[in-house]
Length: 188
Image 1: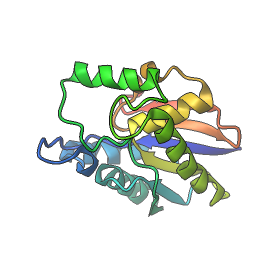
Image 2: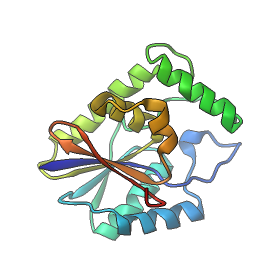
Image 3: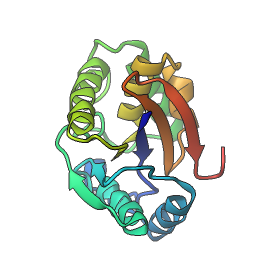
Image 4: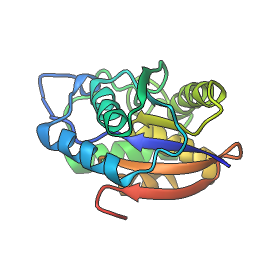
């Protein structure tokens, strides 16, 4: 049975003067991505598909280098769009994300609803799945991975999102998209 592995990017360098979509990995984040690659089995994948955001690209490159695979940037794999989001406290940010999951059809945070972000991400993931006869690895972002996993596997979104480390991986079976496993950086 084929598998789909959704990898959340590693730890970025947070810069108040740069939009989150443009953040790059921190030095520690790059080291974590390299270490995580040694713990994760790419299966039969030949390509690591990635969001076009720098932190995801750099995570994908670190994984692909370790595994000897190609990296392919794919439109639609980016995070829930938050172009105007300002820096919030952790509590305020979590409250907004909780509201986003609770009201998926509303524009409660950012430039798109959770439902729109999920549909966009699902189309992009399924494009990668249909382009390959092998296992599929996608490097992306916490909110959209959560939305996808919640739709596919019936997980409770906010609790699942809170569990996601940087980096981490969620494995789903193909073609039925059942959540089969989780690998966190710290070993959970």
